[in-house]
Amino acid sequence: MGVGGPARFFVEAADEATVVEAARWAEARSLPLRVLGGGSNIVVADDGVEALVVHVALRGVSSRDAGGAVEVTAAAGEPWDPLVERAVVGGWAGLECLSGIPGLVGATPMQNVGAYGQEVSQTVTAVRVLDRRSGAIATLPAADCGFGYRTSRFKSGEADRFIVLAVTYRLVPDGAPTIRYADLEKDLAARGISRPSLRDVRTSVLAIRRSKSMVLDPADDNRRSCGSFFLNPIVDATRLAEVERAAGDASVPRWPEAGGRTKLSAAWLIERAGFRRGEGPGPVTLSSRHSLAIVCHDGARAADVTAFAAEIRARVEARFGVRLVLEPVLWGRRPGEL
Ligand SMILES: Cc1cc2nc3c(=O)[nH]c(=O)nc-3n(C[C@H](O)[C@H](O)[C@H](O)COP(=O)(O)OP(=O)(O)OC[C@H]3O[C@@H](n4cnc5c(N)ncnc54)[C@H](O)[C@@H]3O)c2cc1C
Image (cartoon, rainbow, N blue to C red; front, side, top):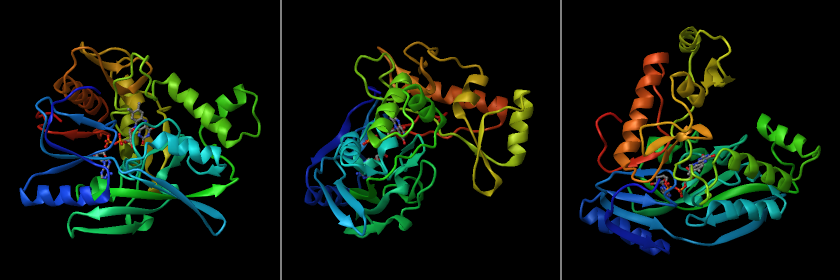
């Protein structure tokens, strides 16, 4: 987002020994430790972070055959999209819909990164971590990662306990692409493609994302965002009925979830609460192409971002009784409202 202040202490960790040493150094001084990947999903407070910030710069990718599948292990500091491209070019299915998501490999298990019908939890088999509690390096099988919609054990259950060092994804050689998302189907159909390859799907996903300012493009006025600022809320039947009543509209967009619950569109709720794309209080606005993204412009401060987010959340809650949950992580001192 291009806002926020400095780290009190900062280290770039290009090998695992440096990560371990950094964790010990912070522990010995009773300092909080924060892990920085690409920084695409973090809002740093204007007066910075009173912590040791460890930038994970571990590199390296390897792959091996595994009983008809291919297992790709990437170090946490590997940029995500080139890994997706490598899988697509190799004909390995499983990551193609996750094309164009900014950031590094190590962050993908944090919020179980997902888009266009895929989530990393569908392919992650193991996550290599430094367990800050024991000081040991361990490999957690996917079943121990607590993956859910935009969450995991790393983000909510035991935030701050683990530093991700590497992630292993199990992909399908010569596998068919995942096409579960209406926009994706439409784009492929518009291009006259009836039997899409992994490359076709990647091309479509990138085009759709670009049209919504959801790729990092230096020439895009909406480029200073952290993607979606709020999660799509999942509600029970009673709350759904209240939302329908408040909206005066039974056609509230929705997707069925497990246990009779329903996922709603945060973007729809925000628009119905009176916010418009491209508008906002001066240096921060909603993206002109996506009402879930808050965008910074010249002169924006982190406090402007959090104040606008708080206003959106309060108005959606007042109108629909639904309290939106933030997707990005806030670092440093928080203003009272968020
Ligand atoms: C334009 C745009 C579009 C986006 N679209 C999507 C999307 O479609 N789907 C989606 O899921 N997300 C999306 N995002 C959000 C973001 O790209 C992802 O969450 C991404 O995985 C963040 O990666 P990062 O390396 O930048 O993480 P950072 O922003 O650096 O960190 C995010 C969180 O993960 C923690 N973390 C990072 N690396 C590690 C590590 N190695 N070990 C432990 N903790 C770590 C950080 O401490 C922080 O809490 C989008 C963001 C932008 C800007």
